[in-house]
View 1 (spheres, chains in turn green, red):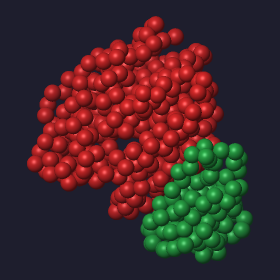
View 2 (cartoon, one colour):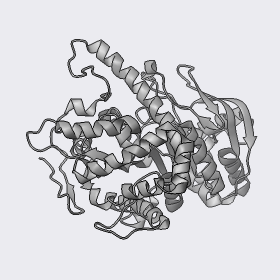
View 3 (cartoon, chains in turn brown, purple):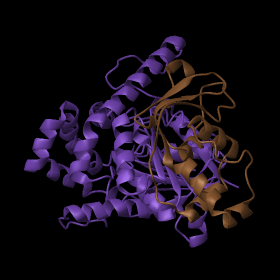
View 4 (cartoon, chains in turn yellow, green):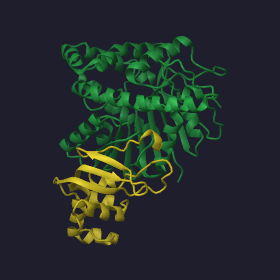
Length: 124
Length: 348
């Protein structure tokens, strides 16, 4: 699971109103190189939940992103920032670990890179 | 206002969204075909709910196992699109494999066109995030993400499918645009209003609670975004008709068992469910004539030497599934089964 996906996932257990973002328990993180496409990164930036991305990246061992979301102007001028964002979003893979609901502590396992978000009967 | 669809041509009707919602509850809630327990009386309410919950778990598990077992086989013979092809009506030409694959792509394009997504470039540019509900091995996701330069997330009950979908994405250099998770379409792990396009291509038939399914689709679509549902339905009921004829129900029950389907509903039922939410541009069509060549073609491929060997290797679920295919043809021929598309848009 990459952070671009984590940025979209939330906990849907009945009664949980703010199940985003999920905390990451990193068991095994690997890095896989992906071709750098600056336009794609710029395209995605507008809809990112920045805090969730920064915290998620930190949990996966990457602390290079700024705490606060930069101005859109930075996207045009600063290629090194774009590359950091590219690395965090697309090149870090959580192969084994868990995603943890911020409200209930419930763990959603991640195996072979795939999160299992199925709820149990008593959670719906 | 009841929509009547002329079955012999590609038509659509634009329906007003002010009609009251009629729930034919026995057809919308899950009913285990082989169970004799009645689900409609509520004096044993809690027991019925508990039974339904366990049955839902069993259905979910059955669906996951069915696709875990059969996906590889399907992919080997038909490729990565696990849905019907779209053909010109009355096309009697024997198509090649590549002809059928093209038809499957055409199904995606026709669905986009019907919903209004591909009316103009401005509309297309708005699509940045797509959810593929019941994504199979990700054929639609990869196609749509490529087409729109958007991000697509797919959900499936089958871990085998999710893995295969991710592997195919990586092989096609699309891993940065698409990802696949194991999740339940009835409990989608997303916050409200995240997706510009909510795509359900032939997965609706697996949903035991159609109302809940539609609620989730409506919840996760963004304001201004579109929902596209392409699904197997039973024929619309006529004015005054409460249920299908017993022989029709019997035919569907036999199909339900091997394909892990809960009770079927009609296109009208989907339209009514959508109308109960504040949605715009609700449209539907009957594409049964446009998918007619599909099942005969699938049967033909199953009967080839390669097909038979693969079936035997795959397992009982695949074999039973293959034996059920003639029932699908019978269902279409007798007008019981319909191939429907239902689309709408969430207001801004």
